[in-house]
Image 1: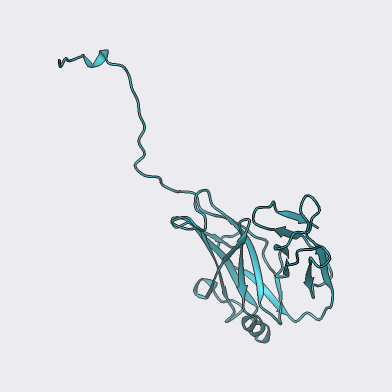
Image 2: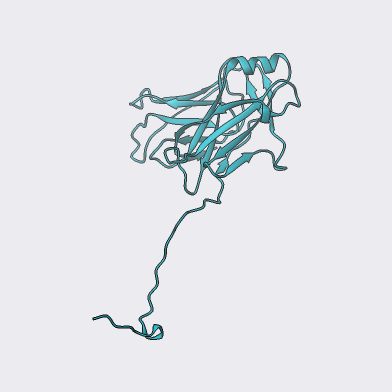
Length: 212
């Protein structure tokens, strides 16, 4: 039969409901700015982009873009050309600037100005100089050098590892180790000027490796 119980005599119960989830954390961009670029080929810039929730396959998806201009030495990349970043692996995106653009920037002595963007569908991050407003500037030059940096990529068991992306941080010099045996599994960063570099190697499913 129905009965009533005074409220103050009932067992205390609690529950939690979630009606919506608001993402307030913007993506993070890790990137060493490129200051010089060589003519004579397409040039690739790398950055690492992470987010607390979004991935490249989620909805909404994590995406990244490089904005650049070369119409003058003081142009604004915001209204310039957009290059969609492609996820390479291990959180790294690559952005390819065509050779025609690079060579034109050298001919006109304009150089390139750029910055990076990343969005998780809700929040957007702009990666610029420390003042938060100025883009990065790249000088363009024809490099007449035959120097190269070469090596072999291996896993923790010393077995040759193919498909590893290797690049000199802060430059556009990069290569992919593409062989399946160490006899031919050599990466080579060609026409790289003599100097000290931080070399980064990464592949999806493996930890990032840095060396100088």
